[in-house]
Amino acid sequence: MLFAQSCEFVAGATRAAVLPPPREPEIAFAGRSNVGKSSLVNALTGRRTLARISNTPGRTQQINFFDLGGRLTLVDLPGYGHAQVSKDRVAEWSAVVRLYLKGRPTLRRVLLLIDARHGPKPVDRSLMAELDRAAVSYQVVLTKADKLRETEIAAAVTAIAAALAKHGAAHPDILPTSAETGAGIAMLRAHLARLATPRAIR
Image (cartoon, rainbow, N blue to C red; front, side):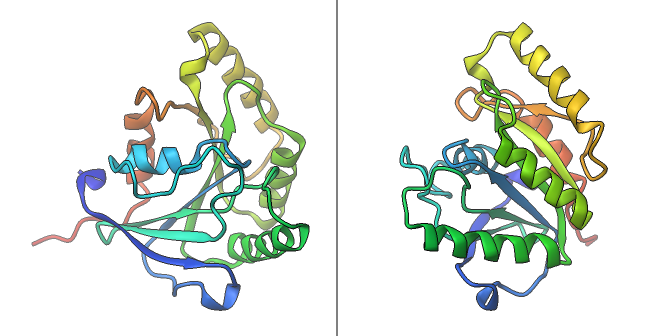
């Protein structure tokens, strides 16, 4: 199984000039600060401390690359929105992230994480429009689904699906997940495994 393999931190980049060279297919995790990006990375890989987790928005302050068994690279992007750092610093992050998203040849998909309780915010919609213009494939992953009832989750998925129909680069499948309970993690792993480099034949 892909996600049972070793997953190691490869590099962290705060400037475009120091991004690691493209190698394996990459999956980027994007979303508002404190939406649960690091928690989801840890849940997917089964490692509690692989990606840093904090209740303080803006703790992820660089683009972090993790190698998954030499077949897939997971990329944890700085959260956007409520980072408790200077505006100049946020502007620097935004510029590097934009360059990464628009010009990374190995980027196979962006996972756009959205809090299931709140739905997409204007800043999420802005990123969706930007990814559409850049023709970068993205998929909505709902986080913290354990905070909602099943009927509420279904309603959230239906509403977001209707909105995504207007976005050309959006993947149609919306995946509710919970890093806390593990709900939806297996399904997300299956989706990502299809994008990985095939296992070498021995």
